[in-house]
Image (cartoon, rainbow, N blue to C red; front, side):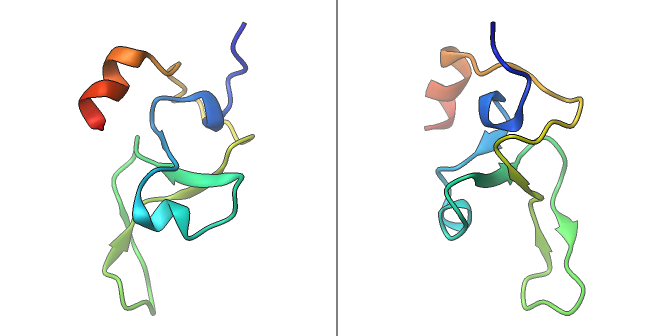
Length: 70
């Protein structure tokens, strides 16, 4: 059985350049759109989440989805 956590979700991104700049246990949530960043040089950013987090939009990672994204 798969644990319903961000690290096992198809929307969890650890491969992008911005995700790799953070800790090993962190990644970007690609379910929700980027949010405005007050006081930042970047106008918007994807939400940063921990691999053990869970939000309710969990969708198990499926190989056919991942091959299209690579």
